[in-house]
Image (cartoon, rainbow over all chains, first blue to last red; front, side, top):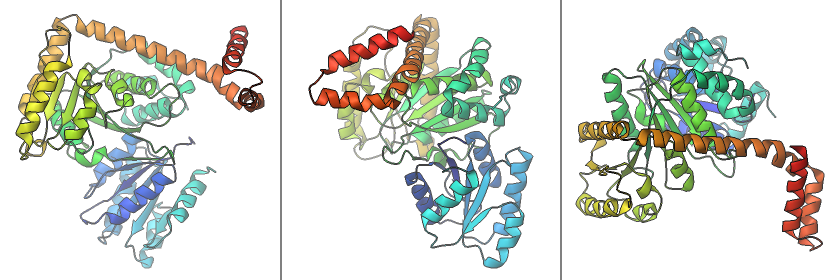
Length: 132
Length: 316
């Protein structure tokens, strides 16, 4: 594990709000990470391609539209198909508690709800990637 | 990490991406790979794109790359953004404007942070260019933001340097004068539909006329564009092609390659010397003691440094 953690913050699907994603991107940057942000309305293909080419250690998916149960499985499958399943995937936004188990089964390691302090996310990433 | 050279040469994206990470993160380990790649690789044509923030560079790059891949080229983009001096982190946002080309099979986009590279960013950029060239990308665009020395150094790697300005960039233009105005082979006035565009066009034309004192035979063009509307992109593509052609027919292409390689060798040497001699010295507990001695005027800095240098000499 290199000391420069590289993160992709991506917004899959059609919702048009990225304040949350930008706050997270900024917060992770301030925690010393290199954060690629790809902007609104990304297709699953765009996200996976960016993750591969940028060789990121972490993907943070932000979603508010309610389409997570449709889009996240697609992303996880495409990551696997592209040999990029060695990446830590976390998610945030509006994701009802009832859906968390199903998403964690897909391999999404952490799901963070609105109001989560950035430090909690930073610590989670450090822990999962096994860096101090 | 073992990187499969054949997979790079075959253009396997994941391997290429891993190789670039190696070049960025563990430079020492990357040298075996780079050694092998260098002898098998013709370096790609490099277009450097720079200018003040918010000028539309990423949007222009998307348009240029889009036209190039349409005419059958494989194109890579290295998008460089600054690292924070405080946290070491970086926000790499150039992909936001490159959504349309991001999934094209012949396009590879890599975002890089400037970091605090020992010996500067250049060696890592050059080596990234080498990896991408080996992977079959025939044209590579390097996009940097700003007007500092770092950017001028980076564009000095490029065969063709494009400076992107906007009508609002009045004050930034002043700070361009010394550095980038001399580096630019082509100038773009983007957002040229803005009210003050005409005035900026006049200012730029005057500056361009004064920019280069050599009689190189290349007349630096100023191309007006509205990148979001695709306006002027055709002209821009033609002018880039004209400069590429000019480099080929004059001997400048070779001159440029020689200059770039000379710089790269110097950078690698500096990097190596720093790793081998200076870094261990900084970590040595006596280093702080030496600093104190100099502050207390028990010793002068010049004697101290020449002592270190003669110690290095014995180690060589």
